[in-house]
Image (tube, rainbow, N blue to C red; front, side):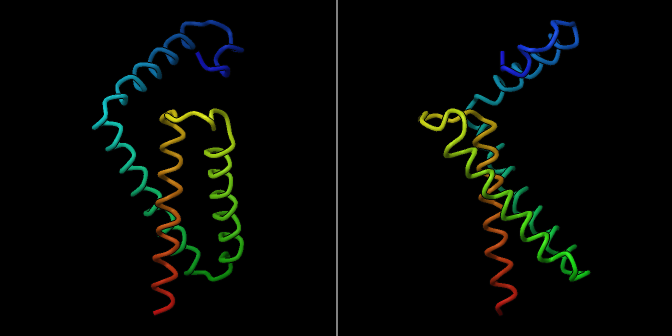
Amino acid sequence: MPQFFADMQNTRLNQLVSAAGGALLQWFQQPWRRLSLQIICLLFGFWLINALSLAAGQSGVWDPSLAAIITLSVEVCSWLYYRGPGAGQRDRSLPFLLLQNLKLGAIYALAMETLKIGS
């Protein structure tokens, strides 16, 4: 049981949420499901940054603040993945892998945006 749930009271709702979360994580341990979820997170990160840059580009006022927020988010994701809990383990837990794939999709979208702007 994660540390977050260990501090809570042991109610039926808490037991239900813990059991459902454990069953969902167990369901995603199958390799093809895990890979498909990672690809979905990669594509979602790409789509998210494209949508944010398009919305911010329309007004032109939010560009610097959005760039700072995206940069800060990417750095926090990198810190969590490389220096956070379980950083020395060879096999990462699924939430960390999904966060890493989301970050990689976002960085790829930023690179594509710079190529579009430069041409």
